[in-house]
Length: 186
Image 1 (tube, helix red, strand yellow):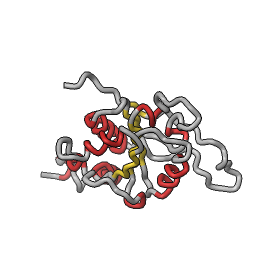
Image 2 (tube, rainbow, N blue to C red):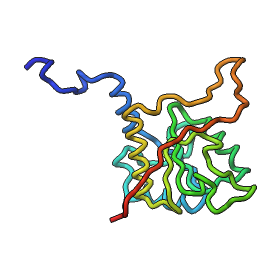
Image 3 (cartoon, rainbow, N blue to C red):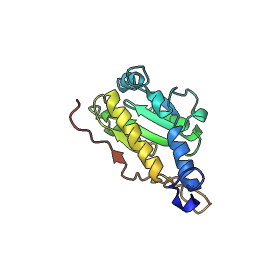
Image 4 (spheres, helix red, strand yellow):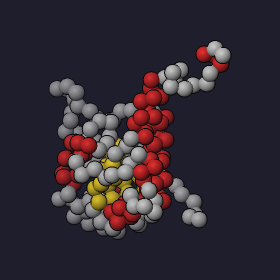
């Protein structure tokens, strides 16, 4: 049997595909639970839903050990700088999931004290809808992120200041992130 007859495997596959597979299979989340969505996020890590089958056994408490931030719940104006600091301390490549309607749009809290969408602070890759989203929704969101990592859609972040001519003080313009759409639960 010649090498031309073999389908792609670890010997004949591309290095990019191997790196994407390794990144997808070893995403380590940093929990940033702020409200009721955090209870559902903790339930996802429990025995009933078992995130360990995706290589995500432990929620990291140190941002330097995590590459996925799950923002669960409403973000107040006082918490926004802390959220950004934790995001900046995470290693590259890093991803963000906005979990729940309060994190995504401010929810029912349309006032001066709540940030009207976490995408004003950090770039969001995938939104998980719901109030609060169920653990199944969060797992589907994580699988959607895994698929984006596998296909290589998430390669660069917008607005990276590299030189003195770049305006790093201008606000970050969010791109349209993926929103998870679910059917009726079984």
